[in-house]
Every structure is written in C-alpha cells, then in structure tokens.
Length: 76
Image 1 (cartoon, helix red, strand yellow):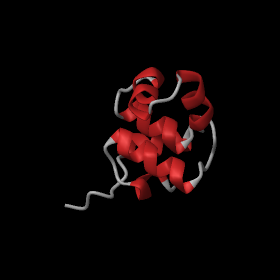
Image 2 (cartoon, one colour):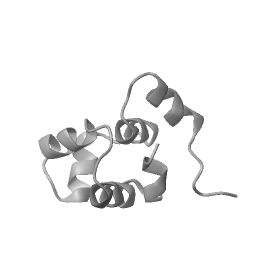
Image 3 (cartoon, rainbow, N blue to C red):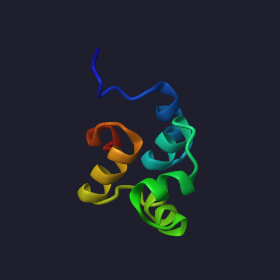
C-alpha cells in the first residue's frame, strides 16, 4: 500500500477551498488546539499557519509529524 496517498475527504475539502493543512486536520478529527500543543505553539500561531496556502517546507515537515503523515502529503 502506498502511504503517500491523499484520502478522498482531504481532496474534497481542498476542492471546496480549504488549505491542505486545514483539510488534513479536519480529516484527522483534530482541533487547532490539539495540533498546536503537538507543535509546542499557541492555537493562534497554528491558525495562522493553517491559513497559509503553501507553508514553508520546514513548517510542512513539522505539521506532517504532528499529523502522523508524510510531508509530501501536504504538498498539493
């Protein structure tokens, strides 16, 4: 099985206008606060990162670790 696949639900959220990070967070049923705690940042700081259409590579890698996915899955 390819671990780098993008679930249909994530793609649907993106098509509807969500950022990739937001779509994955919704798919994983995580709150902004939960992700922020995993990243060691404030909820407001994560909300700002989540709103960016294409976060920096280092940011994507950290978020991917917090989500338990591969960083390339955030590169749509």
